[in-house]
Length: 58
Image 1 (tube, rainbow, N blue to C red):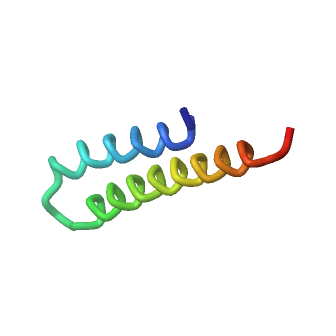
Image 2 (cartoon, one colour):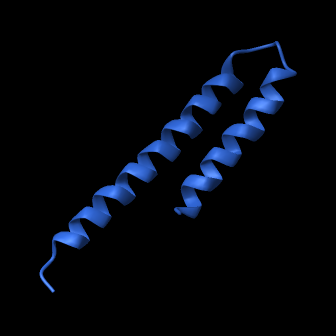
């Protein structure tokens, strides 16, 4: 498991919990979307790296 992706998901959860109690601006919800996008990108990068490493000759 990618610890950076896990941290991004945790950060998104923290921001989402804070944003739900705050009705002033949409900015906190944009942060949630950004953290989830970061986590997804990191996981996809790990998959591509694992595939590339598996393709290397032994």
